[in-house]
Length: 164
Image (cartoon, rainbow, N blue to C red; front, side):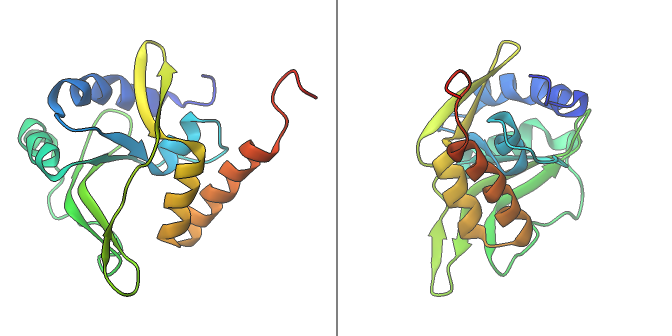
């Protein structure tokens, strides 16, 4: 995939095999990296990994030497999770275990929905379907997430290759 930057590829090449080995529960990428992997035109500053709380704990132990000190999940009034940020060659990785979103009334779990595997040079990278990515990003409601959702929407409204 020519749209994947060398920095993103270096990060994914290192973390995806470890995620497949060490995560017991289903996991996936969300945010800008997931959007880019399905073809959206977005920039990627870090890799967001949605995992269970137990898997987050396993990854925190496994990647302890890479953990960034004193880094907290942005938007703590709207988001909470078993969170840690790690330094990898290429891009930082943010692990969100049991991510929840405050919807104004209560905390709700962020559910990935239907997962799809994106193939990237032999890596099988799980990401939410395009529709589920749009749903997740719109629920977050931040400007950057709404822009990503809009970019994903162009994928569902444009003709497929060979159909134009």
